[in-house]
Image 1 (cartoon, one colour):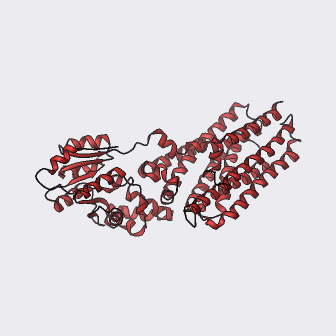
Image 2 (cartoon, helix red, strand yellow):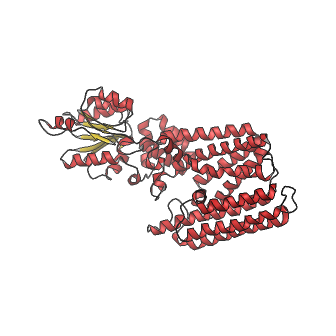
Image 3 (cartoon, helix red, strand yellow):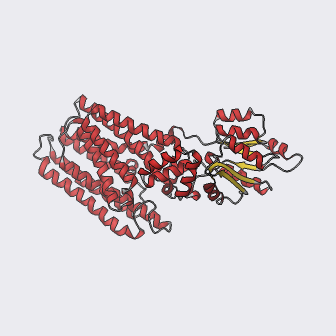
Length: 490
């Protein structure tokens, strides 16, 4: 939402030319921070580089920014921008007004960004020695434009610049900063509000809808016959909350490491971090807090649960840093993460591990992971790309991925049949085990439907998320649940 003051514009134009329009960059012209972007990209390439980041920071922010701008090939064309401010600046430029950038970001990076916009006439930024922020930026602009300038900014440090400016443009400023800027008594040319993230935005960033996958921790509770034991139920519930917190924290980290690739993706570009709706400086502490909370809760449940959750975290981080770009291995790792959920449930309630269940899980979720990759390959090819951004798959891999996905799906069904034949009838848990023959039949129908829709390019990016909303999948799941209850209770 934007508000442009026609009265302020008229007042400025009286008696001569309009003063130059100077735009801040971070969280103003773009909906992110260049220092945070380059730091994340630098760290993502090699986590051991954190020691360089600390060393450069000790030498001063200007040095840190210069080093990062020299070593990080940031894709400035993919950065999310403030479309309303861009439209305003372009319109002012078309009227004959000089428009430029003045940013605390390093000048080398700012010059690259400026080439993205055809209305930018000049660019000034930090030079490796002088951090162009607050009073430093105000002094530089006063020296360059002694007859006055208009300034668009968003933060408290910009108050020192607005104090020297002839007029003010507020772009994404907090209500407190906006009030202090207006108190300076300068004309306010325009106000551009930053969209609020809100609870729905946070839920999207934390992938709350993906918590349904974590319901796997309850499977050992049910299959072990411990669902009537209050202590076991509480432990399983605690494990569910712990792994959900951990998953949300690692999802945020994954999105931080995948910013550039997500911005080139047809749906992932709308994720809060990729779109700039969630700032990196907020996403990092949120991720750390969620991960720490999950580990603390797991420790309360028991050391075996904590150990498996640590293994889950380590595998997830390794996946985010490296494995996700390795074809075949990535699908196997995703299946392992699903299976770890079962392991955490087993550890939480103290159930006896079932090799059948764990092997079945590996084959089933490997198949679903291949379905997800096949969908990404199809959409990438449809957009004229030869490879999937951020993954190790080529467009020509589609046939092999389909073959492996269908093969692992059929293997999962075979394992289910063998389990029923070899273990179910001899177990004391089921009163009428014959009802469980519904399972392989329903499972065959479900995975066949998943791969049929995938082949027709009608599947979204995540088969598990699709199944949660798909009526036929829900009906098949209900049928399997009814068969289990009938075999157990009747």
